Image (cartoon, rainbow, N blue to C red):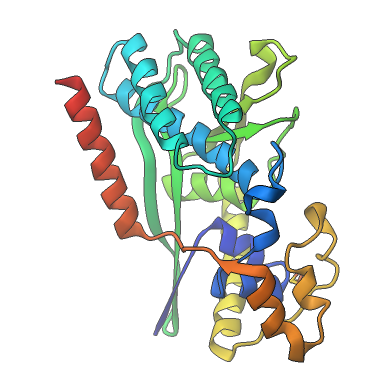
Length: 302
Ligand code: SF4
């Protein structure tokens, strides 16, 4: 029997382009053009990802402290201290951008100062069996930013933080939110939107969008996810990665286009010259980071 472990990113890619899955998930390639300092603007590539990461760090520490029932001001101040220390390591995000994010985070805390969310879990890792037969076992995994109990809602529900520079509505479609609800047994989740816009009032920058999913919708999602992931398992075992050329121009253009546009014999050189290897997420390292963070908080709170 083979076991396939997949998250929402792998599931998204499994139903899109085979080549893209191969470059992103098997080879872990990132375009070097998106990461070096010389290409960075406030909205580009690696810097954009790191901005979201920095905001997540502020929010993670803040909610870890809220979970411990620490007073509001201490939660905010310690989260700012930890986040600013982390920001020093983000060489591709200029200091004024880091400070802008810190101010947005601080305003977010103020805006929700009296929120009624009871924090149950912060950055909750799950791995749940999606499917099993005699030949294959599929485990669906992920990390949910926050689990909360909210007034008028039965049980804990998942929350996903989304940062953005634009006003953005999220549809009910997509593997991430449905997958979180399926994995946690909840029939709803919240998208916690944190806007970086300088011109909008807090009530427009900070919004929480509820998503509801019936059991029938989640069952349908599950059966389609199993279909795509079984196909992915077959591609992995056969090492077959078909191109889907309808995906190349989606989402601002595929970052692997330079490879696919190069004749097959020259692709190795193209990868060597223009791409680097991203260090894949490692659950053991994540557990160490979590422990270090908890120790830091313990020391600060004595
Ligand atoms: S450029 Fe097109 S074919 Fe190549 S990986 Fe991207 S989506 Fe797939």
